[in-house]
Every structure is written in structure tokens, then in C-alpha cells.
Length: 361
Ligand SMILES: NC(=O)c1ccc[n+]([C@@H]2O[C@H](COP(=O)([O-])OP(=O)(O)OC[C@H]3O[C@@H](n4cnc5c(N)ncnc54)[C@H](O)[C@@H]3O)[C@@H](O)[C@H]2O)c1
Ligand SMILES: [Zn+2]
Ligand SMILES: [Zn+2]
View 1: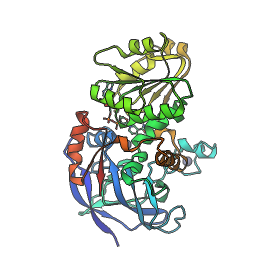
View 2: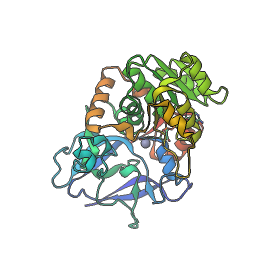
View 3: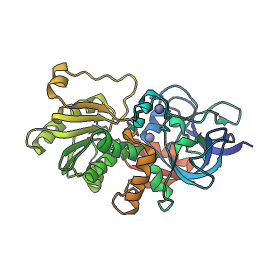
């Protein structure tokens, strides 16, 4: 029997989102239905609504969520009804050429539910990142459910499902930050501040936060930034060099997703350093760099999908660090809101008033 629940839908490019009745089918083979308890508002949801990801409207938004498994389909063994899970958007297949090489974090064929959720009139919905969790229930592939310690509240645990994992992983997994290294993070939203927290966890001793908002820079200090630079007032490349003996940082992370910012990150890096793009550019954006600079500086230019995480390895580990008081997930939660407030939350995000608004059910 299918369920009818409320969900947040983006019907067209740039149109305000609406709360609509959506139909969630019973889970088929390999699928699970999850009662969502909390779901954070990520900038990627706004990218979807603005048509910046693709044109497969209508979207069922929300993808940074925790909840409880309410039913499972045939053949599901990794989770059972009642399990407390964080949803992930990269359920590895185990069989593609990346997985066969043991590089599961790059899986080229990640799983989503095969069935579709729909509007009441039968129109098929595209769930954001294959999740769609601004809804009381959602249908996912069972591999998208990662069990974590239920002692962590859903408002905190759910954040691992996207932005926080992407940021922490950009620093630790993709950037490979080591003890004693210098790091610069451009863009101090949920993703950037998580990269700062990740760099701190990894033992970086200089962590430079760059943003265009003083309020965001103030918050970044709370996550471990040792220095801040307002890039609207000061040239960030020069400022970062001045803070690192004239050399630049070992790891520079673009957590904005804009060519200008990526270029700043590229030039703010020391010789043989790593530059990581974790912010998501829109399809029309282009970066132009002198080839000799790419060659001559050595090191690595990398992008970071989901912080190159393995949910099965990283979600329980970060929840444990949270429960031990070593990683403050609660600090990312600026406000808890209802389903009707997502559009207002986009507005607040746009104006830099929040780090994360989290929908609670
Ligand atoms: N790679 C991934 O897997 C992944 C996962 C989640 C989110 N993202 C992307 O990461 C980016 C950040 O997401 P978020 O949720 O933290 O967004 P956010 O809106 O909360 O934060 C963005 C921050 O960037 C700052 N900013 C804007 N323009 C800037 C500039 N020119 N220079 C410096 N700072 C600037 C803003 O003031 C804000 O603090 C988005 O592009 C999002 O789509 C990527
Ligand atoms: Zn695979
Ligand atoms: Zn996201």
C-alpha cells in the first residue's frame, strides 16, 4: 500500500517551492522506506530549485537527513525496520570498475531506488540527489541507509548526510590534511565550516577562513579557524601568503563553487600543495589558468564529491566523535524549522543569516 505524505517540491526554475502531497510506494526489492526525522537545508537544494543541476523538474527536495527505517523490500539485509539511519547519496555498487579496484569512494554506478515517488496526479518526481527527504517518508535504495548510534539526535546526525560530510571529507580525504599543515577554506557555510572542523581534527595548525561576510568569519572561528580574511576587503591570496611566511597554504579548499574563488584557491597554495574544489559550479562556468602555472606549481588539483567519503566507514566514525564531544555537529544547526519554512530558509541562506536550517518532523 502506497503512502501519501507531505513533501517540499520545486516545480520550475526559480519558482518558490511548495508543500504538496506526494505518493511514496511500498519498497520494492532492495529498497527501503524511511520515516524522516530531520533534514538540513543544503545549498545544493537551492541549486536544484534554480535549475543549476539539471532540468528534471519537478524535484522533491531535501537530502541531508536522518530517520528510522519503516519498511524494507525483498532481499534487504543491511537494515531492518526500526533501525536509526543517516541517508547517503552514494550507495556503492561493489561491481563497477572503480569498486573492483577497491576505490569504492569513486563508485561510478551508485544505487538509488528503482521505483519513483510521484505527485498525487501521478507525475514522477526527481528526488534531490536520489533522496528527497523534505518529506515525512521517503523511498531510497537500502544501500543509501547507514546505521548510526541512536544516541545522536537526528538534527545533528542528519547533517552528515551531505554538507558536513562533504566538508570534512574535502579536508581529510580529498585534501589529505596532515598534522602541522596549513589550510585555507574559501566559503564558510555549512560545507566550508565542516572543512575547517575537519582540518582541525586532522591536526592542521594554521587554518585560514575566507568569506565575504564578517558574520560567517566570526562563526568560522568557532569551528577552528585560526585566522580570517574578508575577501571583499582584502586580496585573499596576498593575505594568505602573508600568514604563511610568503608561501601559501598546503591545502586550499574552494567551498563556494565559483571560478573566481577557485582561482584564488589555486594561487593561495604553496608549491606542491593541493587545491580542492568541493563547492559545486553551475554548468556554464569556466576556469582559465595558465598551463605553466598548473605544471610549474606541482601538487594536485582535485574535486571532491561528497568528500570522497565511504558512508559505512565515515558516518558512524563521525557520530562517535560527536558523542565523545570531539566534533560539534550541533554548532552547525542555526535553527529548526517546519516543512512550510524551506522557502524562507533559502532566503536566509542567500542572505548569509544561517549555517544550517534543519527541518524537523
Ligand atoms: N561536493 C559536494 O559533495 C557538495 C556537497 C554539499 C554541498 N556542496 C556545495 O558546496 C557549496 C557550499 O554549500 P553550503 O551549503 O556551505 O552553502 P552556503 O550558502 O551555506 O555557504 C556558502 C558560503 O560562501 C560564501 N561566499 C559566497 N561568495 C563568496 C566569495 N566570492 N568568496 C568567499 N566566500 C563566498 C557565503 O558568504 C557563504 O558563507 C555549494 O556550492 C554546494 O552546492 C558540495
Ligand atoms: Zn561501483
Ligand atoms: Zn547537500
